[in-house]
Length: 219
Image (cartoon, rainbow, N blue to C red; front, side, top):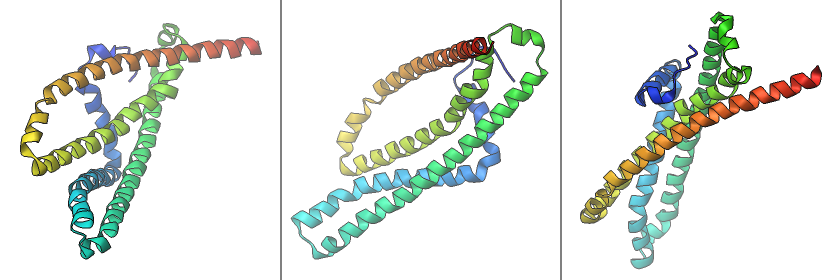
């Protein structure tokens, strides 16, 4: 349904919980993409874990065994990560296009049911932008944001484990910075939501102006 409620009046988690419902028809593709994200994050963490022992065995100990196997291990890790990245990128792009199409259908179907007073109350540019621009932003929040959250989150967890194995004391010292970083992320996310809402309004105004210019030219 088309709503005029301001984003600031809605809890932050409510829109995302509703957006996750759009992923249900693509659950198998989403599971494949999720597996790719897990493998991607795991490959990054594994490389960070094995690179130091491999370099020590190669340049310090000069072990012939590792001199032979080190290039193969590194290439294998990156090939696995490339394959996982392809799956997650293709999966999220496939889901994103499907979500965009579904949202546009729902918005257009709702437009057909609305009274004439709704269209008279606002500019046509903003109403068109809901289908042409806002739906793209919503799909991006539904796929790209989830992808970044999962991959980066798992990578952070993997890196923390690697750091704990390397130096528990140093890791605990760095973890003291987590509250500060969390507050910074919270402030930036709120600022970004306000900017995103302003961009959506600007796109509506641009569309409205372009329609008036083109229409006046034709008349």
